[in-house]
Amino acid sequence: MTDRWQPPQPGGSAAPRTATGKVLDVFRAFTQERPELTLTEIAHRSGLAMTTTHRLVGELAESGFLERSHDRRYRIGLQLWEIAALAPRGLALRELALPFLEDLYEVTHENVQLAVRETTEVVFVERIAGRRAVPVRTRVGGRFPMSATGVGLVLLAHAPMEVQEQVLSTPLPRFTTETVTDPTELRSMLAAVRRNGFAISDGQVTEDAVSVAAPVFGPDGDIAASVSLVVQGAGTRPASLIPTVRAAARGISRGMRTPGTW
Amino acid sequence: MTDRWQPPQPGGSAAPRTATGKVLDVFRAFTQERPELTLTEIAHRSGLAMTTTHRLVGELAESGFLERSHDRRYRIGLQLWEIAALAPRGLALRELALPFLEDLYEVTHENVQLAVRETTEVVFVERIAGRRAVPVRTRVGGRFPMSATGVGLVLLAHAPMEVQEQVLSTPLPRFTTETVTDPTELRSMLAAVRRNGFAISDGQVTEDAVSVAAPVFGPDGDIAASVSLVVQGAGTRPASLIPTVRAAARGISRGMRTPGTW
Image 1 (spheres, rainbow over the protein chains, first blue to last red):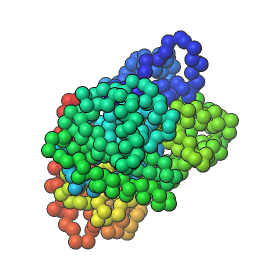
Image 2 (cartoon, one colour):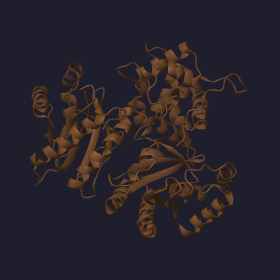
Image 3 (cartoon, rainbow over the protein chains, first blue to last red):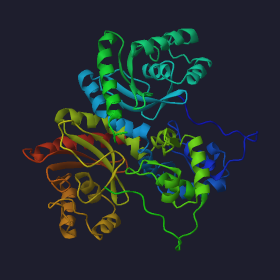
Image 4 (spheres, chains in turn brown, cyan):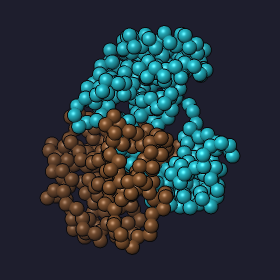
C-alpha cells in the first residue's frame, strides 16, 4: 500500500506554488497513515509557512472542508466528503455496482472488491468483507500497485498501451515469493487476461489468498473498473468462481450503459 | 432532498472572496443534480469570472481533483475522492460500521442506513438496499432534513440544545400527510426518543415506509451517528425490529471505543 504523501521538495526548480496549489497541498498532507494532523504537522507536510497554514486551515475549517477534533487536531471534513461523493468513479460507480457486489457476497461470503485505475495504480472504491473471509490488505480509498492484484491485472491488461509500457518499464514490486516481477512474464499474463476475459492472482499479494477478477466496461467500450472475489487459497477452486465474477462484471457494465445512470 | 448549491450573491455586503474561497466555490458548483458541468456552467454557478474559472479548473484538472469527460464537461475527480475517504465521519465510520450493517441486512434484507448530522441536516454515509426492499429517497452523500426520518429524529434528539432550537424554530418540511410539522409535537417526540433509546418514523417521508433508528455514541459519549432499518409499512411490525437495530447501534458504538479504530 502506498502513502500518497511525498515530502515537499525544498528549493529546486519547480515553479512557485499558486494559491490553488497551496490549498491542494493542505488536503494532500492528510493520508491513511496520518488522517489527523496538528497545524504544525500540516505546515511541515505541505511545506507551507506557519502563517499561511494557519490562515488556509482556518478557512477550510470554517467551511467544513476540514474538521477540528477535541484535541486540536484537524481531519478531513464531511463537506469535502459530500462533494467527493459526486465523483463518478467513486461513489457513483459504487452505487451502481452495489447490488451486484452484494449478490456476489451473498452467494460466496468472501471478499468482494471493486477497483478503478488512477494513473499507474489501483484505487479500491468498494470492499465487502465477510467475517469468515480471508484477510486482505486493501481498504476503500486505498491504492495498490497494479501488477500483483487480480483487479490490477485486469485494469492493466485493458489500459492504454503507454500506461502498460510505463508499468512494465519500472521495477515491479514484490509481496510474496509468488509475485510476478519479470516484465516478460507479466506481459504474457496481460495478453492472457485480454484473451480469457478474467484474471487470477494466486498468492501474489498474500501467500494464502487467491483473487479472481473480471473487467467492467463503460458505455464507450473502454474499461471502467474491475470486480473481484478474494478467497482463501487452500481448499478453494478459483476456477469455479470465474463465471460468478464475470457475470457480476457484465451486470455492472450493462448498468453503466443505461441512459441517465452514468 | 436539498441541493447544496446556492446562487452566488451578486454585489452585496459580503467580504471579497479569498483565493481559497474561490477554489471551494468551484468544488461547490457540483451537486447531485448537476454532477457534470462545462466551464461556462462552473463560472456561472461559482460566480467567478471566466478567466479565473478557466485557470482554477485547469489547475484542479491537472492535479486530478477534477476530471474532464469526453464531451469536455468536468466532474469531481478520483483524487478528491481518495482524500475525502479519510474523513473520519465518512468512510472511516462506514468501514467500522460495515460488518454490523451487513449483519442487519442479512437478517432482514431491508434497507439499512447509517447517517450523521451536519449542522441542521442528516447526511447519509452508508446505505445497503435489497432488491425487494421498499424504495427510499436517500443516497450516500445525500442530505435530508432531520425532522422526518428515523435517523434524523435520533440525531436531533441527541444534538446540542441550540441545534434543536434552531430546527424547531424554522418551518418543518412536509413530505406526506403523516409528517410531523408541529414543533410542540416534535419536541415531545424527541423527548421520547431520548427516553426510549430509539426512534420510529412511520410514513413521514414516504407513505409506505417505516423507519426504526437507534443512536451510535462516540468514545466521548456524544452522539456520533444513527443507524436505521427502513421497511415497508404494510404488514411489518416495526416493534420487532427495535432490538435488532439497537443491538447493531451498540455494536458500532463499542467499535468506536476500541483504541486505534477511531
